[in-house]
Image (tube, rainbow, N blue to C red):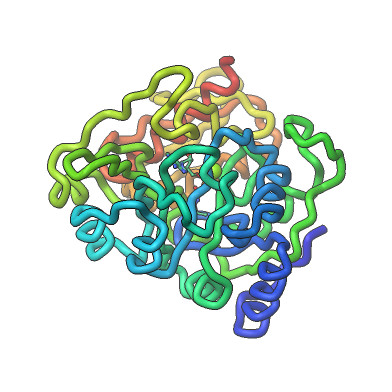
Amino acid sequence: MTPVYPANPDTVTHAVAALKAGQLVALPTETVYGLAALAKHDMAVAQVFAAKGRPQFNPLIVHVTDAAQAASLAARWTPTAQALADRFWPGPLTLVLPRRVDAPVAPLACAGLDTIALRAPAHPITQAIIAQAGPLVMPSANPSGRLSPTRAVDVARGFAQSPSHTVSADDRPPHIACILDAGATNHGVESTVIGLPDERTATLLRAGPVSTDTITAITGPLTQPNDTPNAPASPGRTLSHYAPARAQLRINAQTPGPGEAYIGFGPCPWCVINLSPTGDVVEAAANIFTALRAMDDAGFPQIAVAPIPNHGLGLAINDRLSRAQTLHNL
Ligand code: TXA
Ligand code: MG
């Protein structure tokens, strides 16, 4: 089992040394736990894909300290990118921009695309590590297609076995040097991802903690991603994701059906878990992955989830839930 250390200055030093030696470490962020490797280290980046069983066409986010470091990796750092960074960084927002051709980032990290996804995370532990080690690729620290981890224990358990669905030929559990434990993450869902392909266009690639309203106040109206089957605007969008390991999921359920365990939202006498008794989407987002995991662990074969209002963080919750449901309907 991967060692779990409390996040403190000593373990930060340890994690930085492991990263510089080309190893993987799992780190807390304000959204979900991430599986980190040095972005410039080809082998370490390749091992992130192997550890997650992640398809190599799905690129990784490069995590930086601030806008200046992000600008150094982009071909064009636009005024809109700067304005968004000024407003939301460090924080749960990822910007996808044209990539600088000679950026010191493993080509595999961007999956061969001419764009790069950049985010300055707010968590002080991860900030300190990036400041000492350099930019890090950091996908959510879960086997590909599974629930994102909001606690250190979720990471340890997720990688304890080699998942049968991985694309890795290696059937051993992946080697992760350590997991730094800083308690449960704040937001509970992954960052908002915005594409900025040119000066005028801003595209919502993934809903997340930074609401679209606050973004459009800076960018103007967001365009819809222009996916084609062979060239999705953001490869992760087309994948089924966030699935419980065993349970069948039914979303937008007003009441539980026969044999279903119910995840509620708002006042709800019959639910097994309530995402937010007061009907607060921010609280619900922080709880959604833990709730699905707990229901799965308890062995419920069928889970029904109450309707979640489709505004603010509710958009991100509904996005994750509909993908989790899709996997089982494939
Ligand atoms: O909150 C987060 O963003 C977390 C924490 C750990 O920072 N990370 C995370 O990474 O969610 P990941 O790999 O699980 O999701 C990254 C998403 C994927 O959907 C991927 O397709 C998209 O970002 N992405 C990455 N690079 C891209 C690019 N160059 N163009 C379009 N989409 C990109
Ligand atoms: Mg992920």
